[in-house]
Image 1 (cartoon, rainbow, N blue to C red):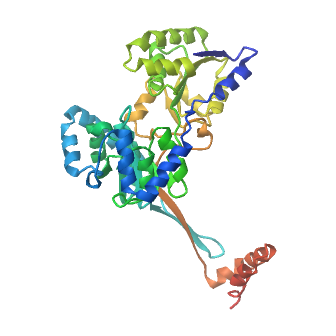
Image 2 (cartoon, rainbow, N blue to C red):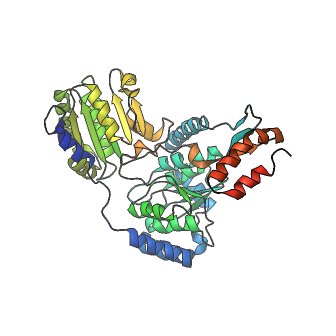
Image 3 (tube, helix red, strand yellow):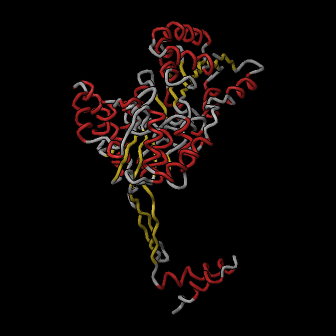
Length: 429
């Protein structure tokens, strides 16, 4: 775990080194993924079945690629009532927040008499990838499927790997709650390729969303252009700004909540009180052995964790904007004042009673967020990822006479004379 102090002469160099850490996988997957995509394009379902047998240790036939409604019903029925109620609460809150995002069409007529506007329409088909290897995330099903359904997407196809043929009941229950009925028991780059290019059994989609391993991320990168994608997700990260009014154990567990995701995850504490920083470090050490995923969280904290002591909160805001974290917790006495000045963060959690974990499940805003400092230019998943904008223009003869000569002049200046003539022929008729 790294300790930094803004008062130290070496701070800038040390912080720059922290920013430059490469937490992405170094595994060379490009060629392998390209081969898988090429095979799926050429051989369709046969290639998908072959890769599923090799990677997920299950033999499928074309009629078993899709998980049946009866299997989804049985899985949903097996979920304990209390857990099903929690899933429904999360889904209801996520739906409500994303429904509030829906934009309105725009239509206006200017002084020249030109009518113009913008119309929003949903995508036709979306593919949802859900991890199913080391861990299963029903929350991600809700976070990806519900915005698409709220946006009005007619077809949502979900792929979830089922190693050794094991289905996760809560994942399928989440699909049922989110209104997803088209679910395939496949994963990896082969699933992404099938969604992008289509096979005899799996019709292609227009956009692919959802997290996955390095092979899934690379596959999404390679099929981009054929289809849209949400992002190339990297290891999870959190930056916690906390003053000494907080319970050190609370902050320690907040840091470990990110660390337990993956050995490459990153948790950073920024505080203005060095004694509090020490107390949090001690609390992390005490809490870590009690976690079932202690090995993962410990590796993450040891390799990528950091405690930064600032002299004042102005310094902290500047550091946050340079880190541009996926998650930002403002565990401060007056969080709104600091939040107003933060420019770059995927999602922000304000106050000591709002840890980031609440956003992972039941708060309402999406937990699919930009990682790896991409919050400088990217945003979290929303209904806008499942909508597209179409602009429109109409003009009367009088309106064209007023603005058309300028279009003719500009077209001629660019040497595009057919453009100019297309307008000029209609002027003054």
